[in-house]
Length: 493
Ligand SMILES: Cc1ncc(COP(=O)(O)O)c(C=O)c1O
Image 1 (cartoon, rainbow, N blue to C red):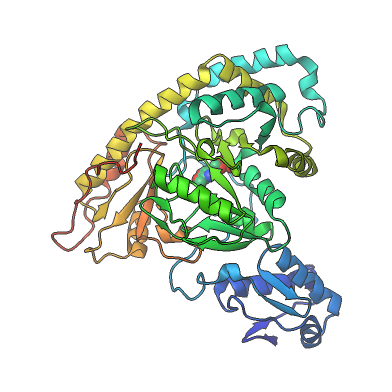
Image 2 (cartoon, protein in one colour):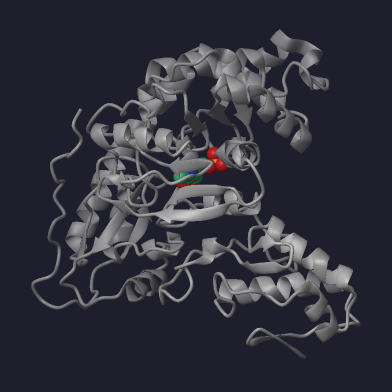
């Protein structure tokens, strides 16, 4: 056992795990648990190597790995500190976003089904599988064996005809002004975010501004690419735009429906955000993950459509519109990034699977895509009503201020309620619901206490039955069931 800045590392020299990895894991664990504080200096490689009785190269390799993963910053060769991105996350005393873990199961796991009310689950049973299969057959006939070959040159950024179809769809539905060759197909929007981080981070330790609370998939992709993450607060109009420029490589935002709060960004703030990013010499990554699902109004135009400077990159996904295991996302790139992005994509997996891309192209061309999206919009609107009703009936001490779209609803604890977020999460878990606390999406800042409820994957009758389980939470009198009516929209369009 050895001392490492107020904490300890124990190395198991008999284990098969290399010492370098053991050191990296021990430091990572201490950073995540807060035992090593943001900005705290680590011992020099020489000192730690002596202390642990390992070679200096072993410690250098462990530090390099942690710098690459964004846990540590190397200010000078001699001074290595815990990354700034862990700033207020540590010591805020609140529950913070956990890095996702993938423990090795003892037996092969079964595929999972939707869990009430886990967020971000579409209802895949609505998907017209028979039509999809017909489109697949047609696509295979049309393209023939060429769909089966390596297509590294022609299709590194996706099947060209699908890129054309998506460019048309984005022009019509989201006001995105782009040529087909600016549209790149990725494996879900997750791969788009990971590749964008690689391409946009000007140097190791480049800075990214992100919404806090925000989407964990983005936080993780940027951190893994070595970004220094600066969290920006969120209010009831989405990302709060800083008054002064902040130099950064890019800003990540979900303006159509802030994830997880659900607030949509009004026009004035959208314009302010674009000007802020322009002055900060930063690009904007606009994650348009579920903007099609607005039930009271037509979808808001994208941030991309308002951008006079060519700095907004629009990212979207078929995961919610069609089905998540399709793993088809897209990104609309500025001309100047197309080639770099193609190189990064090619290094990752040459190109994506083409049979599904050709099927999707047929699905769009025949109009089946639009029929399906309209059907989901209608169904989900009814399901949202059922959830609002159920929560209202249950008299849970929550408000639902952003109940006009999406697939999830943030239920905010009423200020006068004496219930803690933690208690609500556990109370729901005891009744079989997986509704994460909003603070679990926080990096550094505080979210209003509440939970995120996903409603899209269940029929209205099921939602009604499920929400009956919500009755009976003891709360002080006078705090129940208020504010459940839809508030008037604040957007200025
Ligand atoms: C904010 C946000 N962006 C993107 C996605 C979609 O990711 P993918 O296209 O990789 O399935 C999700 C899914 O839940 C999300 O919540």
